[in-house]
Image (cartoon, rainbow, N blue to C red):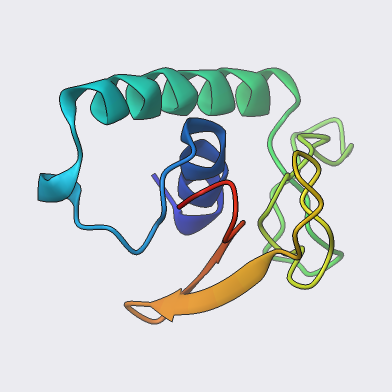
Length: 105
């Protein structure tokens, strides 16, 4: 799972992406599993996420872009759609991670 969909699943599960996996409770793991399945199912149904116009953006043979709506990824500084707190961005292992500091405590 890539960092974009991982950020979205963690947001849905209300889990701080800076936490270590071995610190999650059984309940949190269950919420995260459910969120991962939901995010991937919705993303596949909406043909993924097209972020821009670079040649590396995924497009199916029909040429249309993906329409999966991102709640946190790429929205640094914008209000969280759930609580209104500004979305923050951190770098983890060289990759961007976006999250809501209020919803994902």
